[in-house]
Image (cartoon, rainbow, N blue to C red; front, top):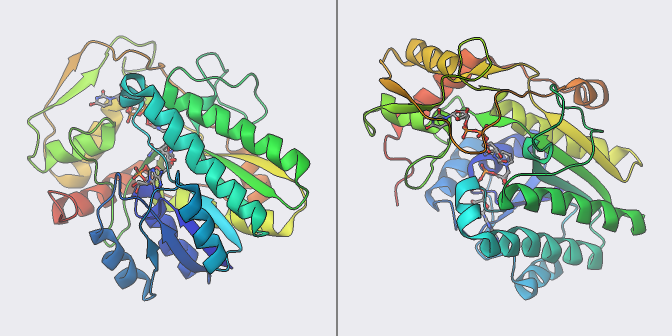
Amino acid sequence: MRVLVSGGAGYIGSHTVVQLVAAGHEVLVVDSFANAKPAVVGRLETLTGAAIPVHAFDLTDHEKTERLFAQEPIDAVVHFAGLKAVGESVQRPLDYYENNLESTFSLVRAMRRHGCGLLVFSSSATVYGDHAPVPYVEDYEPLSASSPYGRTKVMIEQVLRDVAHIDEGLRVALLRYFNPVGAHPSGTIGEDPQGVPNNLMPFVAQVAVGRRERLEVFGGDYPTADGTCERDYIHVEDLAAGHVAALSWIATHDRRVSTWNLGGGRGTSVLQLVAAFERASGRTIPYAIVGRRAGDLPAFWADPTLAREELGWQTTRTVEEMCADTWRWQRANPQGYPD
Ligand code: NAD
Ligand code: WQD
């Protein structure tokens, strides 16, 4: 298929581009480079051995989006483009609602006008809100989220369900990611946060490589085995494979909307992750346990049964591999991608 990857220059999008090409798809990318560096494109071409046409524009621009669909035959869209920093979304709610919703409206309108009927969307475990029982199961309701970022995911899921309800030509996959980490095993592409990392793994990796002095562990008094929060970390390579599987499923089945958790189904604590990273890197990670971060839940993980049964997909990579691959990327690219 000819697949448009929105946000394909970003962290998860770039890894998925590699696997889509490996699966025999022809890929084109649209990315505004709001949170990505152009250097990733050359690396993708080296890794895939394919030319990856990149359209650099903001998807909230309906006219440019329409022009792209008028020019290019597109069979499917894998839609990663969006802003994703939880804390920033609290400070800049309008930017988040506008960017994440408007880019989706613009894409879906163009898809409908041009008869493109396959859409894979990046949702998040954050839509399970604060009260869902663990492990999280796809049919849980009501969905909710505690940040504007998370609410854009709840809203977009609903928009896509409503549109699919009246459009018999549309097949939508809502993929709820748990905590994506890791990098391509080559060490040439990986996660490159701008500024101080919000997420645990890139922060740990920057401490290991000497860019930051020590990790602050947010809370040591949670009701978990070692007192630190537990999350369902998923290797970005497993996550990318989940997209390839979901795309092929919706292309061959008639269900209009499918929702799948993409997670491993087990929790790992902050301190367990730090210890695994120390083993993988051979470096000591200095850390201090500080107060809790507002909004953090003690522990959650996926019930990954549905994706296993329907897609034949499950995670295969261990926390050790997540750390080893993150470290290979970080060590080879201590400052991330060049400008
Ligand atoms: P990322 O920031 O690395 O990638 C997103 C890409 O989208 C960036 O390259 C950015 O430049 C681009 N983009 C943003 N707004 C755009 C717009 N209006 N038009 C065109 N391009 C635009 O983020 P990521 O970690 O790769 O996440 C990808 C998707 O997965 C996001 O939708 C995110 O919300 C979702 N997600 C991420 C995580 C995570 O922990 N990384 C977890 C769950 C869900
Ligand atoms: C993991 C654990 C922190 C940083 C976020 C979003 C979620 C999803 C994935 C997009 C927590 C602790 C972290 C640090 C720490 N994104 N931590 N010191 O919060 O589970 O999920 O990213 O959809 O919506 O909320 O991931 O990596 O930020 O935190 O102790 O410097 O690490 O408290 O327990 P989180 P995270």
